[in-house]
Image 1 (tube, rainbow, N blue to C red):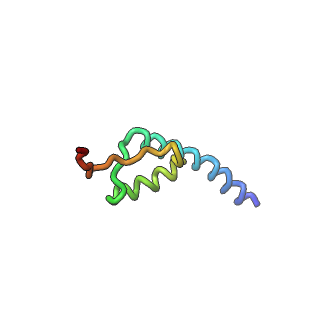
Image 2 (image 1 turned 45 degrees about the vertical axis):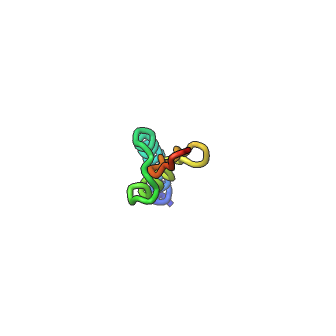
Image 3 (image 1 turned 135 degrees about the vertical axis):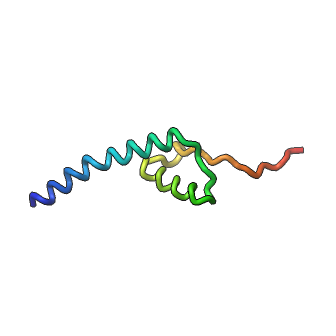
Amino acid sequence: MFDLLNWLLLLVQVVPVIITVASVITALTPTPKDDAWVGKAYRALEWCALVVGKAKEIAPETDKKESK
C-alpha cells in the first residue's frame, strides 16, 4: 500500500512538469508541416501539452496556389 502511495505521489509530481515543458516548447516553436517526421513528433508533443481543439495552431501551407 505504501508503494502505491509513493507511485501516485511521483505521478502527481511528474505529470505537471511534463505538461509545462511541452507547453513551453509548443508555444516557442512554429508548427511544422504534418507529413514530415518532425510534424508527427510535434503532434505527440501537442498532446502532452494539452493543446487541443481551437487552441491548436494550424501548420503553414507550403503549396499555395496563385489566385487569379
